[in-house]
Length: 356
Image 1 (cartoon, rainbow, N blue to C red):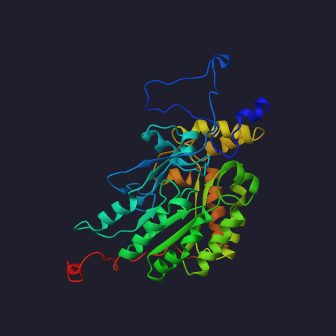
Image 2: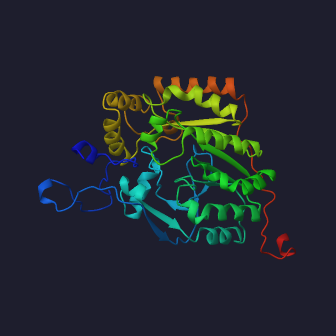
Image 3: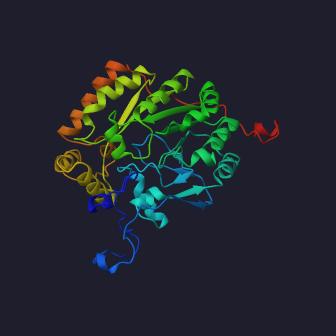
């Protein structure tokens, strides 16, 4: 193996494991010959059991579009290089780089906590967004089935839920999703940001192909489950030219509406992304970096509500206009469905007590 191959971890997005900003001390590699073992390795994924005290997180961001979210997992094995959730891994004492992809925290008591919340006196039903931080259908879900159990809980309580994912494992749960859809209790967004397989393999190394995700949209639509396309994120110079084709193909298989975000590199993600883009697109790296900066006032990140997601400036405006034209041409004017909250009930209660 030559030195170039040693520096790139296939099957991982991040190629760095930067220091946690909350740590007072850190270690660095200064002299290679002084180490008895590799300084940086891509170890196998570890799953860490956690038992939090609450499962629903309140969201106060006015540009997100939802107010409470649920994430059965922290960290994500998909390894998407741009993921804004990487920074949250530092709060758990890990790195936003390789640790985010290979140290997955599992909330084993998620179902118990959700039932406890729904049974709480005075609880008022409001749609819950699953995967607001990390994908609820990442690979370990195939074994643990926590997301499936959570969906069963939503169905039992007749509580609305929205899901965003890029994993076709969702097809396993078509029966529950169809039952929720029949009651007007669910909507699904499927994320695709490129139709080019070479882009997906670099940017989202452990995810399903675009073709598989389009098939997922088709099968969801065939079951009358409201499904949309999320193009996220748009990275100028890498996938910004694909928006019309993505919208057309998603519409052709049943997606009724679409949305998008422009990449922003907040916190530790900026250096992780820089390292990645120079290794994967050495000839175009500077142009890509400058394209991102052009959308955020000369910076790689923007924290201003609303603007942070859509960007600002000529480049961002061009992307916005391209999106509007493609949606109008291929999808029409449909928007997110309003999920029902009036059906909510507590199945564990006596029928008479449900009146209170």
